[in-house]
Length: 182
Image 1 (cartoon, rainbow, N blue to C red):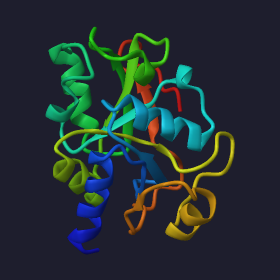
Image 2: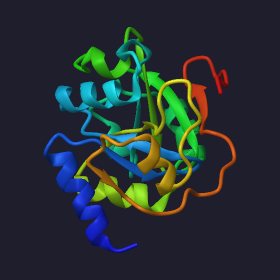
Image 3: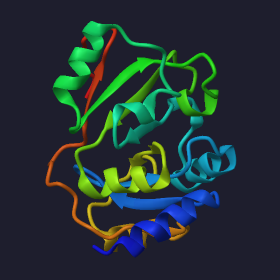
């Protein structure tokens, strides 16, 4: 995969665009989480309510700092044991986080990805991005670029590549209770 595809996706993100990109298990839809219009457009494309909240994916833990409240040393140890990797954690939200990202929850779903292209995308963008499955709400998620093009006609860029091969969506764990939610 050439870097120009990543640069094309970053340009779209910087201009409020919605992109598709491969992740650990499925193609994701993403946008700049701080751009309310981009998030609204992503939710409209997906036909999903903002009340459910969104997942934020990052190349490293530092890219998540503005989204989450400070975590304890014990929680940090748990995160480090699973990241980078296909585990999404629900962490307490930063008090300044816009509600359109977390819904009506006091937690936000975050992940440090091990997927090389997704991590490169976040590094080139200079921060974390929204990461939700590339599908209409309730439909089967896209696993190929062809499925993205067929089902997600209104996106601005697609980063071609392979999903990492996980057969299930990323695991979701609640850092406060230890409960596995998915």
